[in-house]
Amino acid sequence: MKHIPEKNNNLIPGLHSVREMLIHKRNDILELWILKGKKSNRVKEIEELAREQDLRIIFKTSPELEKYLPKITHQGVALVVKQFTYSSLEELIRISRNKRPSLLIMADHITDQGNLGAIIRTACFFKAQGLIIPKDRTASVTANALKRSSGTHFSLPIARVVNLGRSLDNLKKEGYWAIGASGNGTQSIYSFDWNRDLVLILGNEHKGLGANLEKKCHQIVQIPSPGKVESLNVSVAAGVILSEITRQRQLTINP
Image 1 (cartoon, rainbow, N blue to C red):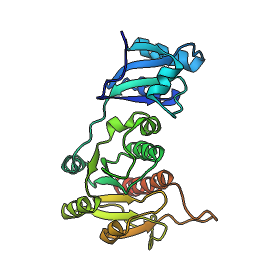
Image 2 (cartoon, helix red, strand yellow):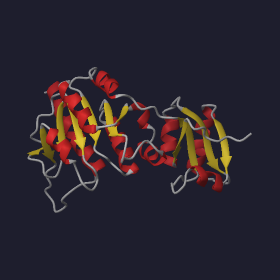
Image 3 (cartoon, one colour):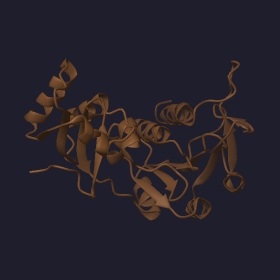
């Protein structure tokens, strides 16, 4: 019997991502793939974790793994997981209302799948309630993104919308503050008051925030640099800003 991922399944490659998914015992996992002849202590640990959970383990040849994970560093292991289901913008609003002040993230045409995966993971770490991405000209939830997110995409509702500008208008009508992040920002992230319902907009890796979205923002903030480096990778910048948001909000709760 051939065991191949159906069209409605995804693959999560890489030793770290696979191990983390297995440790958290996600019920989204369908089976484990291991490269035939692949032997190491890390692979042995992964195999043992899978057997403890009664997961089906399939040993694949190198050409078979390359077929399903082309040009992806899979390190000889991959998990077959249920396909990720995108949420609607309305659902994100409903979910975020259960946590006040609310925090949503909008990614303005992030094109690198690794960056998207890192943003997903960072957003989960800081307990954002959702991520909004466009349908076109952007990275989506693929194997590379899944590898970087280490399965945290299952914990973060992600909406894929036709028009970011229109979606931002809808969020503003619902009472969210639209806060854009840019090196040209007029206010430091450390002096801005983050204790409000907000959507944080992150710009494209190369072009930054689109002019249309920037016009719609209530405020453009920047990360002040004490050194000679002018800018940060978008996923790193997201972590810095989300860390400051969390710090301020915790101070409000525990002054």
